[in-house]
Length: 248
Ligand SMILES: Nc1ncnc2c1ncn2[C@@H]1O[C@H](COP(=O)(O)OP(=O)(O)O)[C@@H](O)[C@H]1O
Ligand SMILES: [Mg+2]
Image 1 (spheres, protein in one colour):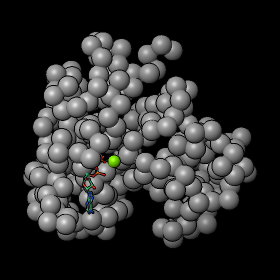
Image 2: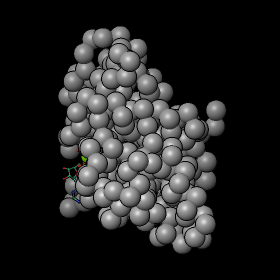
Image 3: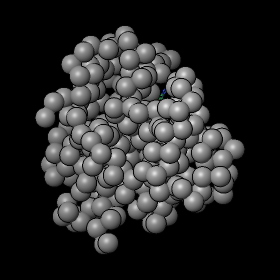
């Protein structure tokens, strides 16, 4: 498999403080990588940098082995970021208008926008909500809607910041199914969450950050040994039981 996204020794400073110090990882095309760490570890800050919304103080970022550390434009076009607060990201009057917002912003042609919206709606099974307002959807459906809005812009890497926050069991399952479907369609996914019991068994790689530093990068099975010392709760269940779709 080929490496699609790679970071080397990223450092980010704000207010004379190192928020990130020495973050490195590599994710292959089509992989699902989890980024875990306690609150305040720097996970959202890392996503903002990867997306191209801020520039690291030092370190390097590569996209398909091309150095894009100072090329925010490339990162903005190749990556999609689903923010933690789904409600902030829903802006359209209806589901279809909401999904069309991103493609319209990218100045896609009318037919292309329609195709992107229709594809995203059918991919995420949102057809019956097409003409409804986003506020009428359940938590899980609304989270799927924001993911659909990002997918309609056709990013190669999709990054999700705490996609399970404030969702009930069914909502989490709905989002997990959407994530798996994205993976099956060949997308590369970076999933930020500390709720590892909900998805760990579905991941290919795990990056653990604590206090702005990478403390582990590798396979999920091995990652389990590093959770406790880094303030992440995880039960002792075997890896194949660590996902909320397991009981289906
Ligand atoms: N641009 C910034 N300016 C100042 N402080 C920041 C900035 N970005 C993040 N921080 C601080 O860095 C720390 C990590 O934040 P964040 O990335 O949101 O953590 P996490 O998502 O892991 O909970 C927090 O203490 C936050 O206040
Ligand atoms: Mg965060």
